[in-house]
Image 1 (tube, helix red, strand yellow):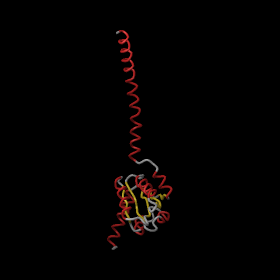
Image 2: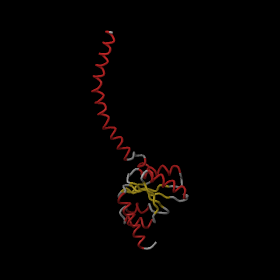
Image 3: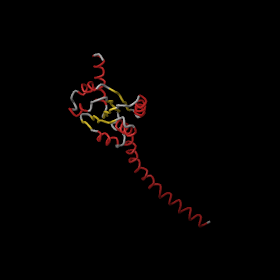
Image 4: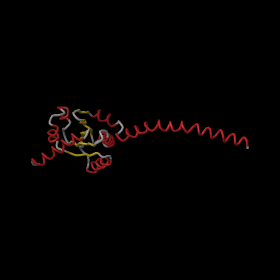
Length: 170
């Protein structure tokens, strides 16, 4: 790889680390092309990306910002999984690692914090941003629905009483 391509790769990596809240570092030793394609397809459906970079370029892009723990993640053949949503990359990676033992989660980078494998799995159990938004909207709508039900209930009860008296009179 010539200098221009290396510089371009380092800039791309810097933007990956800066623009994504979580970057999951995985080892893919022994995975076939079909398995990698399947993983990439699953990730793409959820808006996540899997890319393979040279370890040395990733370490240069980090420029020591995560310390020795972060640099220790980049040993052997690694692939980076990242997405705009901090939970999506971890969730899909952990799920695929359960199904395919050839994919191993090494850790993750969250800003300047370094997570180990257990931290990534814990992150994978959290609900995604869309799920949290749905729950929040549900919580906000619930009181309005209850208020509407309370306001409508007396009118419904009055109508049933009037109907009962009219049936009785008839």
